Image 1 (cartoon, rainbow, N blue to C red):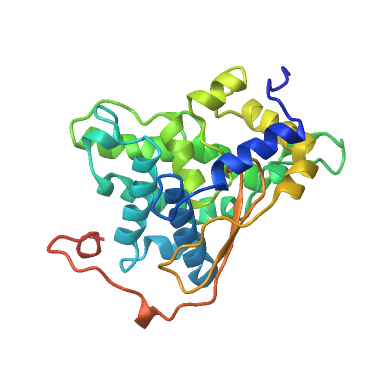
Image 2: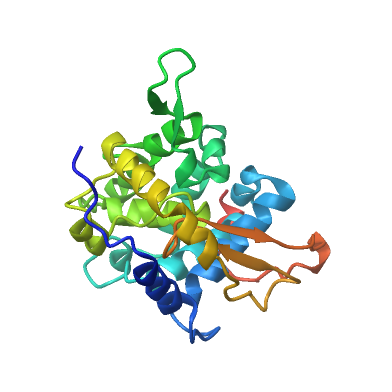
Length: 262
């Protein structure tokens, strides 16, 4: 297996972390990830992953995810998101809320593979397998989004960049497979081999990442919270917050709402 061509020395990782969290502003583009991830992880911790697709939450979930994706360049003119609106993400939210995706919500890169109890070989873990089913070409997320696009008369298929950033912004279990990552990793793809390369790379930098772990932006719209960087630019983030009573959650009012058609 060809090794990932990345500089893994502590100075490089420190520079990447500081570029992400240093000098950031709560209204800045990079903070879009913090708000999005905080929303999904807070809701998951309080009510479980299935809650993101509940009729009372799904519109907010789509809006949070769309805001993050748009801020991170996924809604350019001519792109799939640029030709649609936030409601395109509804089937993706429902997939992530399904029991099949449940193992992905607690998954980190170091959990992609486990040792087989008999052979001792590295094999995909339950979470790794669930993640692969979501993000691979022709996988669950691509298929569900493609079906909705086809119903709209749009023949373009969602890219693996869009698919992985959807998973990144919600579960944090995989980095976005964008052009930068692919260039720096010799064209790594959303396959079992690609996950293994990430797994091996993470094993090499885990100690450095632990040292660089630090607080990032906290959403002012939540009662309390904290993020911890666990894996480079955005490998995996943890969120903890005190429960917010449902009665205190703001419910937007609109003439049209996904809640009315869920």
